[in-house]
Image (cartoon, rainbow, N blue to C red):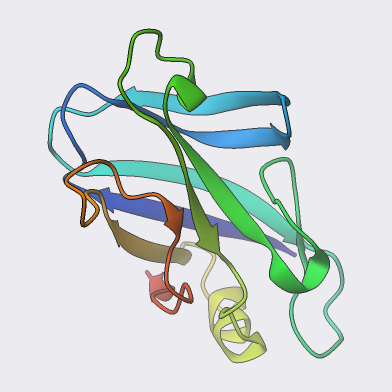
Length: 143
């Protein structure tokens, strides 16, 4: 089963590049690179379910990171997204672990449905949000 996802980054710092990471370590590329103007940035991507059984869903795909139980998506920021000269070099980790079978059953019934999460673009230090999104509980169905 293929599932559509959308990450909305709320009003991140203007002039900074953001993008979804494909690959890991130093062997990665940044996809959907966007330079913020201070307005929301949106990243769309697809993942597949490894199987439709088990205790929790396991997502696979080019942008899925981490162990099966702790899957997440990385948003590269500043120099991590290839922006030379940026004062920022960060990554934002968006966990998938709060997505349940119940939510996925609802998504299956609507071919247009997208799993969406909205994440603050600016952190407590005034720079781009980085580290791990707390729990990643914000995933909801956008029809």
